[in-house]
Image (cartoon, rainbow, N blue to C red):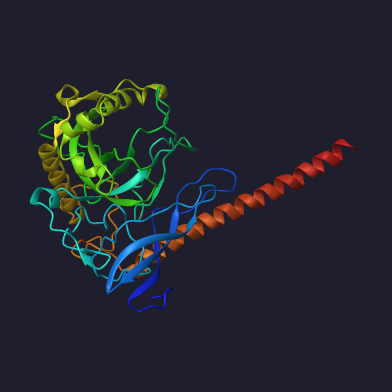
Amino acid sequence: MNAIGVDSSNVWHSWMLQFGCGVSPKGLYVEGLVFSLALLERGGHLEELQVVQAISGKLPLLGLNSKRLHGGENVAGHYISPFHDIPLKVDSKKEENGIPTKKARNDESENLFNMVVEIPRWTNAKMEIATQEPLNPIKQDVKDGKPRFTANIFPYKGYIWNYGALPQTWEDPHQKDKSTNCCGDNDPIDVCEIGSKVLSPGEVIHVKILGILALIDEGETDWKLIAINANDPEASKFHDIDDVRKFKPGYLEATINWLTYYKVPEGKPENKFAFNGEFKNKAFALEIIKSTHECWKAMLMKKCDRGAINCTNVQVCGSPFHCTPEKARSLVESVLTSSSNKESNIDEMKMTLKGVGNKLVRLSNF
C-alpha cells in the first residue's frame, strides 16, 4: 500500500478505481473516465475517498466525496466494477469519522442504498455503466459511431435529476414482471435523485428510496426509482412519495412529462407507463429492489441466462466470474494500452495526411 499521509492514525492511501477506461483522440469526445483516488484510513477504518486525478481528455476534474463502501477490507490499488462490486445496501452500523453513528430507526436503516451516479442534473451526455464490458466502466454511450446526447425537453435543460443506478441489481430481460406483465430492460435499476446538489459521474452516494415509476420502454419494464441523497440538507423531510408532492410540488409531474417525451426528438414514439403513470410508494419500491437484487444474484452465480452482460468482479467471492485484483488490473491495462495505441495510430494518420496535403500543395504550385 502506498501511503500518502504520515500520521499513523489518519493515513491517506493511493487507490485506483475504474469508473471508466480509455480516452478518445484529443479534440473529439471523452469515451470514458479513469479516476485516481486517495483513500483515508482513520483509526484503522478505511472510510473516505477523494479524487486526486481524473484522466478524461476535455472534462474537468470531478469531485468524489463519499463514504467508503467495503468495510475494513483493504482494497488499495484494486480496480472494481461499479455494477457488481459496490454493495447494494449501506451498512448502517459503520462509524463516521471514528464516531459511532446514531442508531437509525428500523425503517430508515432498511432504506439506505448506494447509488452510482452516471449523469449529473442539467447535463445531456448519455453516460452509463457499460454492462457488456469487463469491470463495467461508466462511459458515454455511442450510436452509429457518435457519442449520444439526450435532447433538451422544453422547458428543461438536460436531465432534471441526478441520474444513475443501484449496483447489484438487474432487470432480467427473460423474466416477466408480475406488476407490468413486461420483461426487464437488461440493466441495473435506474435512480432519479431529487436532492439539491448537482453530483458528478462516478460519484457514489447514499440514498433514501421514496417511490418508483414503471416506464414501459419499447415493451420492456424500465423501473425509475425516486430517491434523495441521504446527506441532502432536506433529506430528513422525505420518507415516502407523498413527501415529494408536499415539499417539491410539480417535480413528479415534470418527471412524467420528461420521461414521456425525451426520445421523441430521436424519431421514437412517446413512452408509456404502467399503472397509468401512477407513482408507487416506498414499500412497493423496496420490493422491486429486492426482486432485482435476486435477479442479479442469480446472474452472478450463473443460474440464469445473462446474455452479453459481463459479470467479471473482484468482490463477489462465491461467483464463478470472480477474478483476482491482479487479473482485474491486467484487464484495465490492456484496454488502456489499446486506447493509447489507437490514439497513437490516429496521430500518425494525421501526420501522414498532413504530409500528403503538403505534397498536393507543392504540386498545385508547380
